[in-house]
Image (cartoon, rainbow, N blue to C red; front, side, top):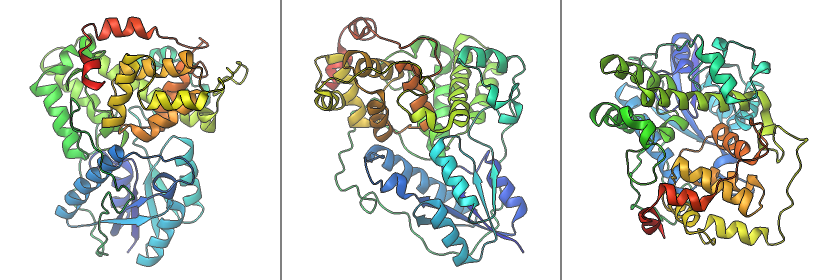
Length: 423
C-alpha cells in the first residue's frame, strides 16, 4: 500500500483538481492537509492578510472540510511553512509521497522547491486556463505585451475539459485536527464592514452559486462589457476573482460555463470579454513564472528605466492614501471601500494606483503591498503584474499610465452617489 499526503494551497476544491486526481490514482490511503504558512500568517515584517481575506480563507476551508467529511475523509490542519510542516506530518502518519498543485509566483515556487528537497513530491497543473504545455511558444519566448500573447493563443485555443469531483477519497486515519478561528489566528478585532454592495462568502459552494446566479439566472454575462466599469452594485462585475484566486473555482470551470451559455443563447462582446479577462489572468501567471522575483523589484522588467525620487513626506502621503484621507474624494471613497470590505472595483483599482504613482510620486510597491494585505481576491501574479503595468515597469511599452482622476470621477460617478456611500 502507498500512503500519500495531498497538500491544499490555492486550490481549495475537489473538482477539476489535477494534482488531487493524480494523488487518488497513485495512493491507497491519502491524507488531505492544509498548512497555515508562517510567511503569510506570521510574517516577520509587514502584515500580509487582512481580516477580510482571513475570514474568506477560513470559510473556504470550512466548506472544503465539510465536503471531504461527507466523502468519508478528513481535512487536517498543520502550521508552519510547508517545507517543515508537511515533512513533519508525513513522518507522523507514515506517508511515502506528497502531492501538490504547482503555483507560478516566486515565493510559492520557492516553497515547492524546498519541499521537494525534503520529501518525494509530485505536482499537478491547475492555476491557469491554458496549460503551459498548450502554449504556442516556449515560456522563455513569452510575448512582451498582452495583445501579442492573446493573438497567439487565440489562434488555436485549446482548453481541456474539467475533471470530475472524486467519489472516493482513499480514506485516511482521523487525527482530529480542528479548523482554527479568526481569534486563534491572531485577529482579535472583528472590524468587518457589512455595508458593501455584495457579501462574499468563501468556499467552492458559494463560488458556484455566484456563477449560477450571475451567468444563468440574472443573465449579467450578456451585458458584462457594458457594465464592467461601474463602481456601485453587486452585479456590474462577475466578482469571480476571490474564488479564482483561492482556487475554489477554476478558470476552466468558468470558461466552459461561458461556452455553455453561448451555445444556449448566443455569443456577443460581453461573453467574449469574460474569457478575454481570463486570458489576462493567464498572462500575468505566465509572466510571473517566466520572470520570477523580478515582478517584485522596483524597476520590475525594465531596469533601464529611471526611478522617480519619492518626496520627503512619502510616509505621510502613503498613510493618507491607504486611510482614504487624501485631497481627492474619489480616491478616498475607493480606498475606504477597500479597507472596510476587502474589495474594490477594477475601475477604482486603476485610479487609486495611478494616483499613488503619478499624483503622490510614491514607490508603486507600497500600493501593491497594501493591496496584498487588503484584497480578498489577492493573487501575487495579477496584483504585482497590474501594478507593474501601471507603473511602467511591466509588460507595456509606455513608461507609465496616468489617469485624470477628476475626469474619471465625472465619467463613472457623475452624481457623486458612490462617493457619498464611502465618505
